[in-house]
Image 1: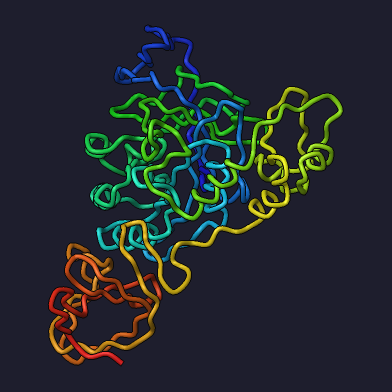
Image 2: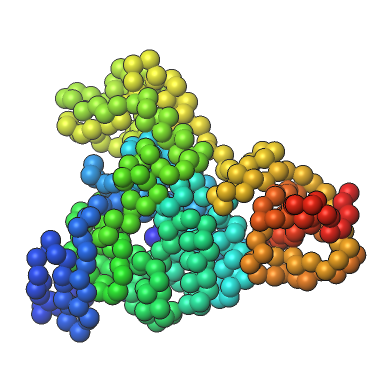
Length: 417
C-alpha cells in the first residue's frame, strides 16, 4: 500500500529451507508455524493508490487483477477519497482484468467509527457486488472487534471482506487469530526492495487463512506492489473470473466494458512509436498511453501487446479514456452499492416522537443521538427501504440517518418543510 510509514524488513536466514514443492504451497520457516498455502490459483496482480495515477500501473502482461484505494480515514471520523479510484477501476475492466477495492483503516477504535467509515464508502464503491473490499490495517491504534464489525457490514452488503497488513504489525495490534478465523487475510512480507517479479515463498508470512500474499513493493523498477492470489478470492464478483461479466455493473465498470468492446490487442512492431500507433488507429497518443496505463515517455518494445481502438473508433475511445467517472451519488437520484435508491431533496424535519439518529440508514446501525419531540434536523436526500423512509443529514464528520416515515402506511414521525 502507498500509505506505508514504515516496514519491518525480513532478514534472510541461512537455515531457511523449502520442505515441499512450491506447487503444493507448503513452506516452513524457522521458529514459525507451518502453514499449507492453497496456491492453485496463483494469479498475480497489483494494488494501487493515487500515486499510480488516474489509470493505474501494471507490472506484467500476465497480471490479472488490481486492488485500488477508494479512500480512508486516519482518525475514525474524518474520511478522504482518492480521485484516481473510479478511472483505475474503469481501465482495469477495459484491459479485461478484475478490479477490487481497499480502504485505509487507521485509528478506528469503536463500532460507531467503523460503521461511519463503511457507510461513507459503500455508496461510492465502483467494483461489483461480491468483489473484495479490504481494510488496510497497518498504522495507528486498532480495535479487533471494530475491524470485525466493519468486515461483517461489508459481508452483509454482498461484498468480500479482507484484512490487509504486515504480520508483525497485525499480531501486535489486533487478535489476528480471531480475525483469520472469520476473514481471509491479505498479508505482506518481503526481504528487500530488489525488483521481484515472482513470489519469494522463503519469506512467506505463515499464518491461518491467507488469501492474498503481497510479496514485494518493487514488482518493477521504480516501485509497484505485487500480489499473488492463493485461493481464487480475486475471482469474487466476476462470473467465472471474467472481468467483462461482473455480477453487477457500476459507472466505472460499464465504461470499462464499453472501451473493451471497441478496442483490440495490437503487437508492437519495429519502428513503432506512441505517435505512429495512435495515428494509425485514429487516437490521441496521450489517450492511447493512458489506456495502456503508461505515459508517452514510457518505452515500448517490439513484441509488446497494447490495447488500441478498433477501426473508426479512435476518437470515441480517446473521449472515453479522457472522460472522468462520476461517483454514483451525483445527480438527482442514484443507486448506492447497498441496492438502495436515494433522491436529492433539501429540507428540514421536526420530530413529533422519539427517534434514533444513526450512522447508517439501517435499524441495526449505531446510534448518534436519541432525539425527542421538537428536535429538528436539516437533510439533503431521502430513501425508501427496510420498511421506512430515511433522510440523510450532512454532518461535519460524515452523514447521519433517521427514519422519518413508515413506508407501508406512510405515517410520518414529524413534520417537513
